[in-house]
Image (tube, rainbow, N blue to C red; front, side, top):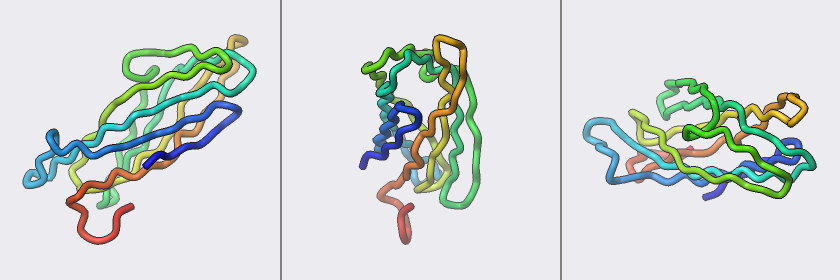
Amino acid sequence: MNYETTTQGISVRVEPSFVEDESTPVRDQYFWAYTVEIYNGGAETVKLVSRYWLITDAFGRSQEVRGPGVVGEQPVLEPGESFRYTSGAPLKAPSGIMQGHYVMETEDAESFEVKIPAFSLDSPYIVGMPN
């Protein structure tokens, strides 16, 4: 399933997937990969400066992740360009939710937040309803 949102002309699309080979349910270790595509549909060139994630598992435990760029890069996107990357998230529960934002900067050094859509991390080991 894809999740998508647009902020100030910048579209963010996320596709999560459960990674069975990296997960050990008997040890409460579950791992997801997620692929993000960021598309600049605006009129200005932007640079992805930093990221913020809020990751909440099925038991309500949350962790925040902040840092520069994504996957070691701070991509610059001209109008009409996109950037795609894949990363991962471990949880100690069979499901959870991720959400957050990127901080973008224009060539004039104006910063703004671009929302990352909330997306479900659901595994085949969920008991009850998924997120």
